[in-house]
Each structure stands twice: as C-alpha cells, then as structure tokens.
Length: 358
Ligand code: F6R
Image 1: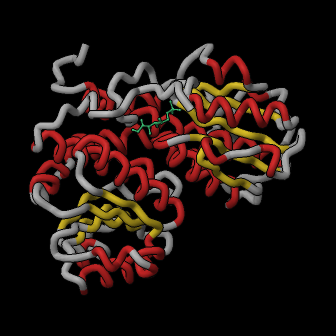
Image 2: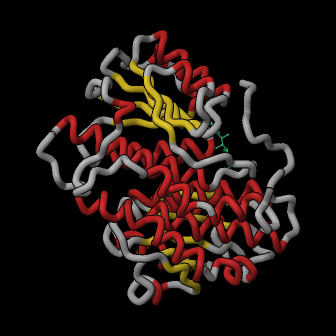
C-alpha cells in the first residue's frame, strides 16, 4: 500500500534514503577507499563505455557518462531507440550498459540485443531481478531500489545514479589501482541518505511550486554533473503536471531557448558552489534580465541564493553527489505542483510504467 501517503510517488520520493542505503550495502569497503562489486569480478576493463536507455534512465546514463569521462574512460550515452551498434565502433572491449529500471523496455532491449550481436560486452543496470535485461546481458548490476509503483521514476533514478557512481569508481580502480581520488566521493556517497533526509524534512518545494501554479512554461538549467538533473527536472514536471517544461545544459539557453523566457516562465537553476559556479550564475543573470523568476537549487544560499528569487537548499557535498540531492528538490516541486493542480499523479494520461513496444 501507500503507507499513509496520498500517492505512491510521494511514498517513493520519501523512501530514497533507505533505497540508497540498500544500494550501497556491502559495496563500499570498510575503510571507505574502494568499491566492491563482486557481480563484476569477471568484467575486463573496457576501452570505452556506451550507455543505452530511455527517459529518466537516459538521464542517469548522461550522469554516468560524465562520471566516466572525468576518470579518463571514454563514454557516450544514446537514447536507446536511436542506438545502432552496427553503425558504431563496437568490439568486445566496448562495454554497452543498458540502464533500465524495469529491465523490459523494448527500445533498450533492442539496443542491447544489437550490441550483443555486434560482439560488445553488455551490462544490465536494472531494478528487476531476472528481467529480460538481466537475463540477456553478459553482466548484471542491481540498483536495489525496491518496487516502484508510480509511473514517474523517482527512487529508481536516485539508485541508478548511486550505482553508476560505484560502477565508475570500480572501473577507474581497474584502470589505475593506485587511484585514491575517489575517497571523498565515496565518503559523501555514504552520507547521501542523510543529506536526502534533511531535504525531505526541510524542503520548501511545496511553497515554491504553489508560487508558480499558472506559469506559461517551466525551464530547468544546470551544468556539468548537474546538466542531466536539469533534463530530469523538466521531464518529471511535464509528465505529472501536463505543463510545458524544458531542461537545458545552462550554456545552451542563449542559443535559442532564451527567446521563450519571460516573466511567466520560472527558471530552476541548479548551481553548485564548487563547479562552474560563475558561468551558471551568468546564465541566471541572463534570464533575470528578461524578467524571469529564478529558483536556485544550490548548496550555497548566501552567495548563489542572493541572485535568486527563491532558494531550494541542498547540503554542501561532493560535486558528483550534489545532483542526486538536488534532484530530490525538483521531484518535490513537480509533485507539489501536480498535487495543487489535482492531477492523477501516479498514473499520468497516455503513459505506462513499462514500455514494452518499440
Ligand atoms: C519517467 C519514466 C520513463 C522511464 C523510461 C525507461 O518518469 O519513468 O521515462 O524512465 O520509460 O524505463 P526503464 O528504466 O524501465 O527502462
């Protein structure tokens, strides 16, 4: 059942600290310096990684791609329906990772089968034990989010991001066993459940959402590690509120979307105090010059927040952990806006939890 919540989506948002603890259990070694993923013992170090996924899982792939690239591992993400292994440089040293909560998404399965045929090594990153993806890939890594009932993916996205963080660290360790640069990252991953709990306990996302009930459109921007979360914030909002929303890497705004920005289009800007801060604040200033209200999702309410009309605060943490926490604020904005608009949150029109047709 919904354990007293009005919607499964709210229950699943609230379950994220526990889902992440389950995901991490036994996977970071005692001293906190290395990752242990026995499932991948037989996996050879890949020369390149390709992520194939759809929707929210595609956004997780974009995050995984950034994690790997910063560790010097070539990585690329594909919308699964656009992936064609025969047109790409793929061999047995290429690791193709299907990111799929259900493990049954037809587009993702088609991409993975093509990768298998082309001779790639395949890995399923999935929530569902013995799903098609788990059965048909060479390797499986479970995200351990627990059952997700709401059509909108929430806790599974957090668990995908955490699992990808472990995978990236594990692959980097294979590439360079002396690497200890990930120590802070792993420590912060272990603190992530507490960070998310503090957001769940103190979030003002409901009043922010209610300040923008009648907006023309909702825009989301972020850079680097926070760019995928901007896309995800927009997807979640459009899915459950039926309002127009778009997400962009912050620097793309000026290349077109800025023409749509007015007083009636709030801009949600995810701004880290530790990475690319001044560039993203520059984008905030650009939209404010067009009269748009700005909601900053930031770990630095004093410096960044002074540029914004509203602040959704997140704890200060490692730059690769911040997006996982920031996304929770955006989930809550979408949820409370949909609730105020009285939408059927758990079952949005035209959508299915598992898309098993091409
Ligand atoms: C959005 C959502 C969808 C799924 C997509 C892929 O909230 O749930 O975009 O993420 O259909 O599904 P999986 O991960 O099961 O392959």
